[in-house]
Amino acid sequence: MRIGMIGLGKMGANMTQRLLRGGHEVVAFDLSETSRKEAEAHGATAAATLEELVGLLSPPRVAWVMVPAGTPTNDTIARLGQLLDAGDIVVDGGNSNYQEGIAIAADLAQQDVRFLDAGVSGGVWGLENGYCLMVGGSPDAVAEVEPAFLTLAPEGGYAHVGPVGAGHFVKMVHNGIEYGMMQSYAEGFELMHAATEFDLDLHEIASIWRYGSVVRSWLLDLAERALAPSAGFEHVRGVVADSGEGRWTVEEAVNRAVPLPVITASLFARFASRQDESFAARLNAALRNQFGGHALVEKDEGRTGEAGTRPLPAGTEAAAGSDPRHTDETAAGTREAG
Image (cartoon, rainbow, N blue to C red; front, side, top):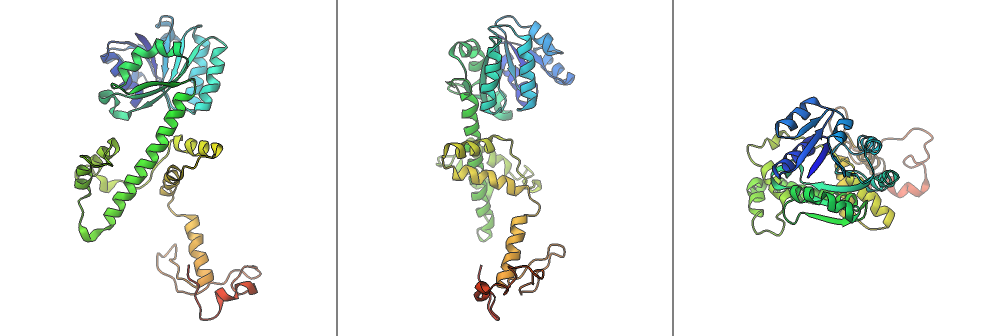
């Protein structure tokens, strides 16, 4: 089939190549001329504008959008809605919010343009291994694009999971699970790293767990690569970003009253990783000092302070000893545990 690919970043460029290898014709557009030329070198037809891309496709046209989620995706699809004809199809393959997809589908339907939301998983390895595809939309639109889905996915790795919105909803949950799995691996390996008395070879352990173990997975395969002696893991800082899907998963859990303790904790762990200095931890330390005289570590000097309750400003009602209800915590010669 002939298909338009809009967005030639890490995912879009590799998907273009996989489609070309599968015998499809691809019209490729990106704002970057360099990216367009690279796609052209692999056999794609480059389009310098969205208008040109639409003109190079034949009805019913299929335009697959692989640009960053949010405003870039929404603006691109809105422009396509002005250019495409009735019966044409827009596929959003980015990590868009499923609720936005439902609204976009309704807008496109006013021009009789069909919409599919395709959750895509596979990352930079998808070119060789294939992409898991979770597709939402009408059966007729899915059938039109299915030849491309079957080429992009490995055997057994594609499904029409439901109506519009279902594809991105399933992908959102997929990424929330991914957060939890990654955090579990990270915590387990950190515990083994701390057990210095055993001199454990973490790379070796990651390697053997890949064979026969109940915790084997592709993420473990990647952990084994990351911990290899030549991988440079010692230079990696523990700062972990999040791209939105984990937050949406937790928000959905709250809205639907579904408990997700592991996924929620893994999201919060990413937030904590980006803090140079935790305000909450500082306040905890200050409170322990105030109620129990526990030693402080000074922020600037990096040294342990003297044990002893430091007085709060005069007039502060919660100052040590100012409230008779607190006398048992601050009596002379005592130190509250905590």
